[in-house]
Length: 379
Ligand code: PLP
Image (cartoon, rainbow, N blue to C red; front, side, top):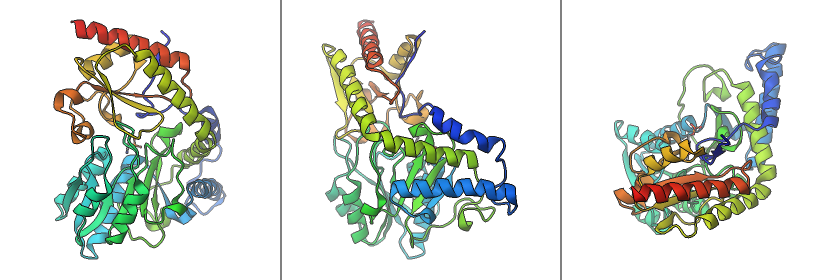
């Protein structure tokens, strides 16, 4: 069967050039980057090169980047580490958007047990946090505001720069989870001076799984999250994942180079897919101002989990629910926060295209989806 993969928001295939760049660090250059001898120094030189290149591409300084074991760790660290640092300045309230990934929302929830209070910033029907909603929620007790750059379920892109300015004016730190945004939106941290922290994850842009980075703006205090060795300037213990770090930088570099052309291609794929769906009644696109790669469709009369399994049998991979729990049967909290009711949320699916997809695949997948929906609605 010629399977079609349309779940790039969950993960992307590893790019072959990225794999080639990583391979030497599994074999001949195997040293522990923190060892002072030749083997260690050679590994650390690769880490340094990767850090320098990634920093340059993100508009950051190398010492503002910390490598992590992915987006989840970076988000956990940011939420807990920034909140705890802010508490030392007497601020014990955290505001997060109502559509955050669980890596952020569950981290915030865990802080409640430590005496923090957590507030949810509402989103409008397009999935956006409005500037006024943030202004209204801010008070002098708020030490941290977290609003993701692009949502993993709808692809809705937030006005991160504006929101970060508002948070900063009120004396709060601002963190953004850019795990979904990083592949498609150019990140230039120099032009966003009010963003104090940002997370990325390599496997969302054709890099390896299990490696990511946290940006912490120079001079901003963050408490440690992983305790152990003195790695990462004493801020994050753990032997460095040298091959993964090399892969992260190589994958980001290639993604940034191809970004404009990829986005154009993705828009064409999305368009071809939607064109083929025309004629199928009661289909609504959820979310406004969305990533070029992502389409969240509310398909009345169909349960998303049933549709997902049906399409899987026909060779098309899509998702229902959050990126990291694609088989989840719960209604999406992000869609509920946008005002959908339980039934509407449970009839919504996420289709996410990637740079290796073809227009022919997009069209074929749409035809398969259409047939499945007609069949399921008739049952
Ligand atoms: N944040 C967002 C918005 C995500 O979509 C994901 C993964 O789907 C994560 C964080 C977690 O990243 P990782 O899979 O690298 O742990």
